[in-house]
Image 1 (cartoon, rainbow, N blue to C red):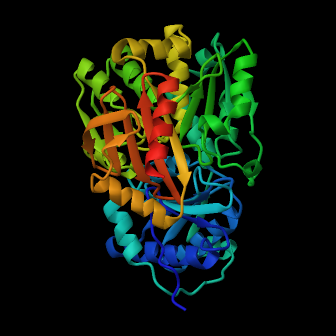
Image 2 (cartoon, one colour):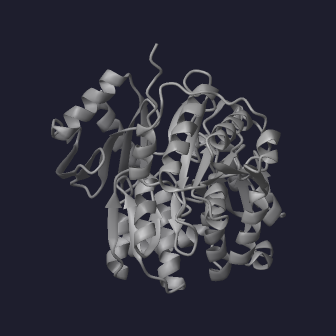
Image 3 (spheres, rainbow, N blue to C red):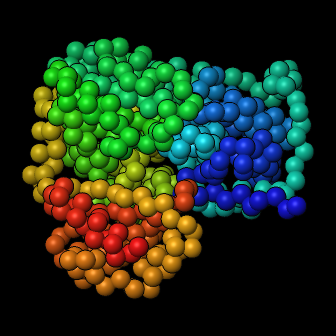
Length: 467
């Protein structure tokens, strides 16, 4: 039987544990990575770690065993770590590559394999394709214990969480943040950010900051429908003024204001751009994924900042960040990077930056959103994820690509864009986008309107039209 072809999607390779995500398949990918590294480095070094998901430790041991057996030195993270900690570790420790065993925000039955480049961010699309092309059909499992590789001088350990916490302490004034009149709540979603916030902000209200690889059966994605307890806590606790949530590997962010209203990634991108440019006098290009609100372009026009739109996947944004002067780079799903940090999404760093903005400006998150609206106007965004069989999903996308849709219910449009999926610019000033997920069996429907009701109505009309 020919083994399944392993495909890296929008953000790494992800699969269901024990179905396709097995020790054997992890070994196949690791062998390809070792072969790829040996093509250009005599004695390559890789930082390896895992988040809080089921099997993380076992899978990182497999990665380590295969890499070491193939002449690649490994620096193994102690305990569970976030994806930004691995990216930071690669850069700080001068490694050629990073591997994170994580399925990010996917449901608990998944695990995955993310590749990180020497620059401290996602490996480039070119490098990922090269590794993928080298994945063998068969591989030998060396079967050595980690102690063997330590004795051989091929394996060492690193306290990445300690290194990352020290780094954050250098970049933020925690004396000021811990005395802030605006109290913070943090929901780790049982993910890898749980210890960091506890250490840095001891006065924070903590939710889901325990180790639970089942995530209570819920995907650890920081979107409104998954964060009911945080929303309720914010709405019922008067002293709390900001609610921060991060996903399973802590590279994505979601926020709540003091009334328990969700503040999505589009608003966070705008707030960070506004803060860095208006308050910190910083400039640079703003790089955004195709699914991000067009209001970012409006703000950049007002501030004289260049904008670049990329395909979906943070690896495209990170690549621009390594080549150009980028102020903010981000995507709709909550992955945002900022100038002065590594070219990587980092939910905790982004959250601290907004908390710093509130504390320094003496303004609540709601007031910061209003500052943004004063520049770009009010808007409401939402996304529907439709679980469809593959044939139906493909048929809808093919019809969209062939300009088969001319109207969505009462909503007409006169302009479309096709960078990654299809974006329809509605005549009412809003937009709709259709795109197949790169990591799950979903059709994503994105929409923006001028009010909550209008956005919900747009999504309903689109659903009726395409199904």
